[in-house]
Amino acid sequence: MNPPKLDGLRILIVDDDESMREAICIYLVSLGAEVMPVGSAAEALERFPTFRPSVLVSDLAMPGEDGYGLIRKVRDMSPANGGDIPALAMSSHTTKEDVKASLAAGFQAHMAKPVEAIKLGRAILKISRQRKR
Image (cartoon, rainbow, N blue to C red; front, side, top):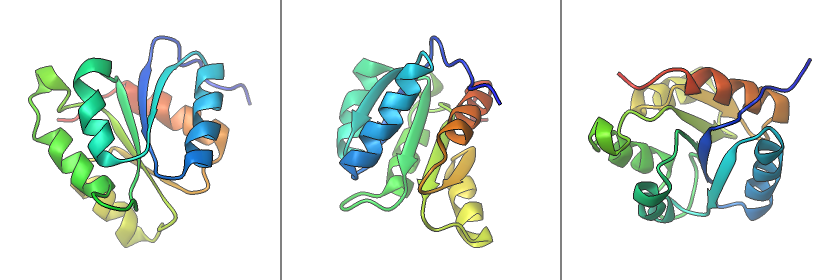
């Protein structure tokens, strides 16, 4: 199974777990992506206008504002400002209800943590080809 090529993608990684953020970043950079790691929803929203990501990858359970709050604020943005960005949720909560909740909130995909690197890369590639409608 060959890893996907993520050349040209700008990926905003949001996770309060620094070691998880670093591992994801190292892997995605090795696939050709440009990555901006941040530790909170507030920092993600602060960096969003200048980094202009093409994909958002966010943990759901974070102190302060969680991934659900983040995606609601992103979806409130105009498409010109990134409100239609493809987004992937990561969570250790993976029941059918958890997945439905993240998709209903505005994410296009939901992955179980800890994430498997190659599956993450493939999921990012897949959602990068679609925009939120």
